[in-house]
Structures are given as structure tokens and as C-alpha cells.
Amino acid sequence: MEEPCKVLIVDDEMLIRQGIINYIDWESEGFQIIGEASNGKEAMHMIEQCRPHIVVTDIVMPIMDGIDLVREGKKAFPEIEIIVLSSFEDFDYVRSTFQSGVADYILKPKLNGQELVKILNRVADRIPNLRRSTGLPEPNRSIEEMLGNLLLGYESSLDKTVLSSVFVNSHFQLVAVYGENYDISQLKTAFASNVAIFQVLSEEAEATFLINFNFDQLEAISETIEEYSQKDAKLTWLVSEPFESIDNLKNVYDESLVKMKKYLFYLPEKTLFMHNQLPVEHAKQPIFDLNHFIEMFKDRMFNAAFTYLENHIEYLSGQYNNDSFEFKSFLGNIVFNIIVLMDNMKYGTQDIERKKYNYFSSINEANHVNEALLQFNEFLDEVRIIILSNDEANEQSNNLEKILAYIEQHYTQPLRLSEIAEHFHFNASYLSSYFSTHHKEGFSEYLNRVRIKKSMELLENSTVSISNISGMVGYSEHSYFCKVFKRITGTSPGNYRKEHHAQNEETNSSSLKK
Image 1 (cartoon, helix red, strand yellow):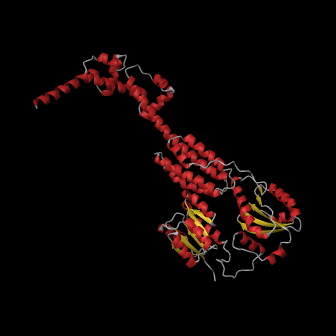
Image 2: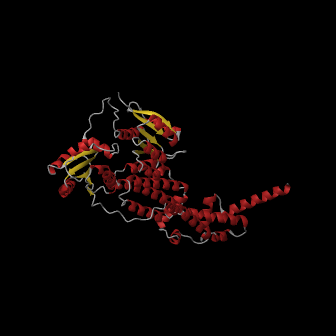
Image 3: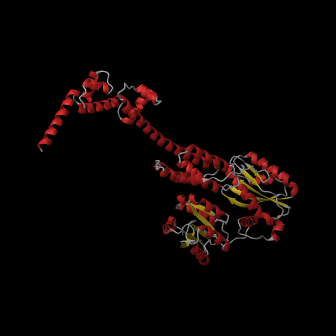
């Protein structure tokens, strides 16, 4: 009878749980939801009662969080596979779960039916004895399958009698090959006839082999692998240290090959990683002080903040033993913090807010460090443009206010555009265009309006002659003053004074009658 893969959903938010449950047609995909829990404590009880094959759990939950659930769940039920739901802000927590045996993780911004099915299938395929597509009994297993299960932690020991007849040579070595279209048969023929090769793991564009040989053949094997690594730049080879007992297989895999896999992300151009010739990491530096970065950003010390950030990213790019998830999560965490900072500082973040999940997704899906940094640097460039545009607009507004204030203070003088441009260190033609663009009228028109407004005040409140007033507001020619005054007000200076005085007399007369 066909056996579905049993799944438990754990999240403190009911809407998240229901969303996951409704994302896919579980039965048609070969899965069965056996329950849901709102925290780790409930989940542990359900695991004990229902024995799911896979647990999908959030990290941040009350009573017992996802970290403790992973730790306690794998300790009590080591056969259970656990998938973690994560946001970029939780990357420190998520990193710690991998040390306890998490099978995979899903970023919440990417959570959808297609992604969920893909990861569930990938994890379910690694579970021994689970037959979701056929009801056939388990066939006799090959040596390769048993070795693969041992590497993945599904087997604790192997039949020594069987192994002694298979492994006739004294030493072993693990080799992993990454890339498309690798042909291991060619490598087999290049080795001595008594060297045996077993393919123990195989995933998409990745295969792991166990080589059994005698110690005096070690140098020739290394030279052959190095020769093959130079033939095809599309393939990458990882070679562990030699070991003498098959009992050390899992330990060498975990402590050597798995760690070497981390180098692939940081050094995508390198085609061979030998256990005794690994690239040297960058010298240790102090940890990144996020609060220091935030304070510099808040103080608008952007150059210093970005330099501090970029120096640390360059350092992280040379820490080859760090998991790629940690590197990507650091970038994602910075993206998140910068967007929050910019929003708090009233920068226009609408466009970048719409794009942020694309940045998160692209960084997370990057195959190597250069791809991740390409997306991250694109984000930083957009941030710089927003900051620069906003600050330039503020600076332009301040410059315009200074120019207008200068005109208000010096309108009585024979002002010229060229003199103001020189005073404010502008090019004259640029200032003319700048003034029209930002004040909706030209420099001369604005100056005339200021002068005529001042002359109107003098005509209303003084007995100074009109010819003297024209000089007092900055006009050297009385006739030109009168012409400009009439164009702006619709009447002559003399008529304006008469009309104003007449209105005042009428107002005063009305007041006396009352």
C-alpha cells in the first residue's frame, strides 16, 4: 500500500498555518498533514503521538521556540526531518538550528506552494524506507545506498562481513564533483585496475564518491584528479584527506567534505579543492557593529557608513568556512535595516519597498558570492541614488532660500544675475535656468516684483516723491520704474498713491460717522 509522507505544521500564527495547509494539494503530492501546533511544546507532544516524517516549524514562538524544538525533537526522534521557516531578521537563530540537524529552510517572503513542494520533495527523498509513489516492498539495498545512508545519518553501522569482501584495499578517500555532465567512468579507467570507486550520494549537479585504494597509490590518484579538474572548468572537485577505516566515513564526510563545500560559494572560479591545499582565509577582524553602522547612517555619515559596511563584506567574502546562508542572511539583514532607517529618516522608499522581496529572494538564491554581491550592490546603488536625490533637493531648496533672502536684502542695489551667480559660486547661465525651474519665474521678473512691492509700501506710507522712490527701490531710470510699476499693478505710481489715499480718507470718514 502506498505510504504518504506525514507532515506536522508548527507556527504560533493560525493564519500562517492555514496558509501553508492551503498552499498545495497535499494528497496528490504524496503528503499528509497529520496536525498543526502553535508552539514547540505542543509539537513535541504531537510528534510523540503521530510520528510525522517531516516537521515544518517557525523559529519565534512562545512557550517553546523553534530552536528548542529542533534541539529536543532531533534528540528524542533523530529520524524526523525538520524544515525551518525563517525571516531574514532571524538569521542568527536559524544558523544555530543547522548545528542541530535541520534538513532545510524556507524564507517566509518566498513561501509559496511551488517552493514548499520542491523543498518537501527534496527532504522526503532522503528518508529511508519511505515509498510515496509505489507500494512495492523495499528492494535489497546496494553497497552505495547503504554508504549514502550512513553519510546522511540514517545508518549507525554497516555489515563488516559484507564490507570486507568489497573493500579490499587499505585506504579510503571521499571525492565530490559539482557540475553538469560529469563522466565518472573516464576517471575510473584512469586509475589503477585495483582502485575501486563507489558513488555514495547523488543530487542535482552533484555527486559524492568513495575511493578505495592502497596508500602507495595516493599520489597517483591526486595527480589524476588534478589533471581532470584542469580539463573541464565547468566541473569542481573536492577531495578529502585519506583515512584507513570505513568506520571513519561519516566523520570524514562531516568534518572534511561538508566543510570544504562551503568554499564553493566563495570561490566559484576555482575547480579543485584538496584537503591539504585549501585557500587561506582573511585574517580575523572584529565583529560587525550594527549599532555603530546605524548611528553613522542616522547622522547622515553615509560615506563612512558604507565604507565600514563594504570593508566588512569584503572580509566576510574571504571567510570560506562560514556557511553561505550566514553570508546571505547578513546581506539580507542589512537590506532590512537600511530600508527601515531610510523610512524613519523620511526618505522616499516606496520604490525600494516594492523591490525589497526581490532583493531578498535574489540574494538567497545566489549560487555564489559574486551573484549575491551583484544583487546587494544593486540595492546599495539604489539607496545612494535616493539619498543623493533627496539631499540634492534639500540643498537646492536651501540655495534658493539663500538667493531669495539675498535679493530681499540688496534689492536697492543695481543687482545683476552675474553678480549673484558669482556670490553663490554658480555659473550665470545655470543660475538663470535654475531660478526659472525652482521659482517658476525668471530672475529679472522676481527682482522687479520685489522692488515694486517695496515701492508700493513707500507710496502708501510716505510723502517721498515718486522719482526719489524709484531710486530708493533700485531703479536708476524713473521712466523705466513707472513702466514696470504699471505692468505689474495695472496703474501708474501716481494714480496708485492717489487711489490709496482716497481709500484711506473714505475709510476714516466712515469711521468718524459711526
